[in-house]
Image (cartoon, rainbow over all chains, first blue to last red):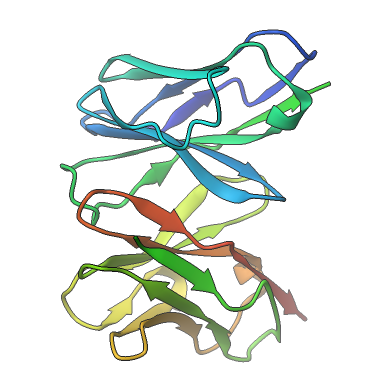
Length: 116
Length: 112
């Protein structure tokens, strides 16, 4: 298996532009997670899906952020409009299992977003 | 509510000496606990996990961790550090609802 695939790996955009980050989870996994990592705040869970349904989006910073999972093999995280403080590395992770918390998460390589 | 505290933001050891990365947790339920490693410009990789089975958990690359309920700790150890162990390490606590809380991370430096 290729593992969790994220695209793009690097994104540089100007303030006010829309940014879309993409994630393909590992085939057969039914939970998907979006994280943001910065030096100041560390690793933060933004949202997670189980069987394509958003379960907890309490970590989404504000309405400028939205996430979708139209099917089991694809998810997007969108920022519109983007701001310089959104600059971070965004990770997608997937796991197999229900809502119990003892399943290993497999992380993608991350997307490094820079908003100027 | 649950939380996790990594007691050291940075640990420096010499190659061949033991490694100890400390983690304390707080959880209302019997938690699952994990250690992840992140090498520079890479995603996180699972080192080991505890899910209410044996309290001493062995992971990859010679790492192990011991769950101590009385001390609410889950410290990560390795008998002999290698240069390739230099990375950021995250302790994670998770309860029944898949709500995973990551520690702030400990950066391990290994000196030759």
